[in-house]
Structure formats: structure tokens, C-alpha cells
Image (cartoon, rainbow, N blue to C red; front, side, top):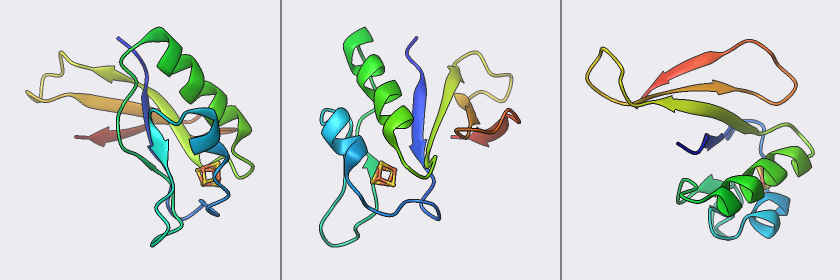
Length: 93
Ligand code: SF4
């Protein structure tokens, strides 16, 4: 299963590098100037582009994690790791 990606809104500066690297998954709406993941990657190529987007983000504002579809809570959960930080952060979806 491809990785799960999220943008840390507090860190995003709206530079648009992520949407340039992964236009099938990231966008920066003109009204907010904050990046968002409008579609999680569904293919290996999209996942690679999203990982590249994470690497290119100048503020480490793209979190990458794996989705646990067999969560005991009954819903999918993503364990996300901010760029440059080895401490996992759990988000219930
Ligand atoms: S590359 Fe990072 S800072 Fe730039 S728009 Fe995307 S998430 Fe925001």
C-alpha cells in the first residue's frame, strides 16, 4: 500500500514546489496559498513523486507515513513522520 502524505499547514510557506513535483497529488490553491494533498498516491509513480515533493519542501512541511488499514479501532490510521524528525506521530483518520 502506498505511503500516506499530509501537509503541515503551520509550516507551509506556499512555495509550490510540492505541486510542481507531484501535480497529481498536491496543489496550492490561490486563495489559501497553503499546499494540500488532494489525492493520496495510488501508484508507485505517484508515490515516488510525492516522496520527491517531501524531499524538495524547503520547510519540511510534508509528512510521510504508512497507512494501517487493519487498525483495531476499526478505521485506517496513518503514522506520519515529519521530515527531519524521527518521532512518529499518530493521526486517526
Ligand atoms: S513544498 Fe512545502 S512549503 Fe512549499 S507549498 Fe509544498 S508543503 Fe508548502
